[in-house]
Image 1: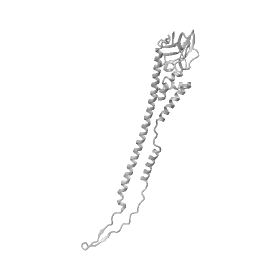
Image 2: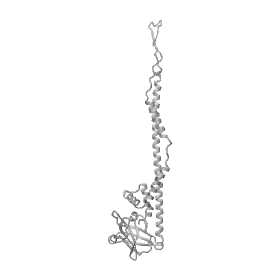
Image 3: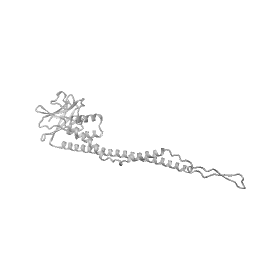
Image 4: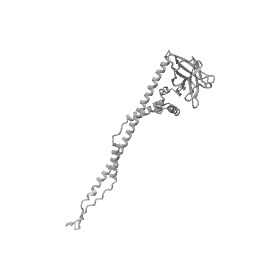
Length: 292
């Protein structure tokens, strides 16, 4: 039986939710979640909590802001592209013929310029103002979009920082708990030395005869093949008793793992078993062993 509580408290689930794990480590978390309902529930709660945190701190833009801006821009573009109705030019009076004594040839004078010609400058100015207004609206809309994107990014960073702080706090609590175990005089340290097949392997068991608690601390163990897992055994009068399987972080020497409670034992040993453990030890795979 796997110790799901120790794995939940290891911080790997939080790292998985934050995307901080390598592909192999992600696969390990997913394997745990597949075979342990408790780990699955904890992982789902973490992922849901991260999403809720980001949504709770999100600031939505003013209602209808985007539609109002786009509507205004499109309306102005349509107005600018609409054909201007042709205004009939006013009737131009014929030139007035004047004759004077000093100038026997008739002098030609003309009527003032039509109103349409004088208003041409105003039309050009209005077009320029319209183009400037469109450019300003487009710039403001672009800046609003950028500001909204930056706000969402800042909120995501804040949620990530809060989640990382929770992971760090949990790790600190685990470290303090482990330190208390090492300092306790109630625990008997049992050194587990490597077998002839694995002389470099080593670990130690901390066994409390009063409350029957067992903790395992790994110094070095050989890498495991696919589909295999280390399992700890307690030998009481020669009878092997299952003390639990090792989490991957424990086998790597990263964590102090609490194993199953053992009422009585004279020897502890570790073997390689199929993932999930076995009912009895495979003696040919024994890696470390130590007497109390």
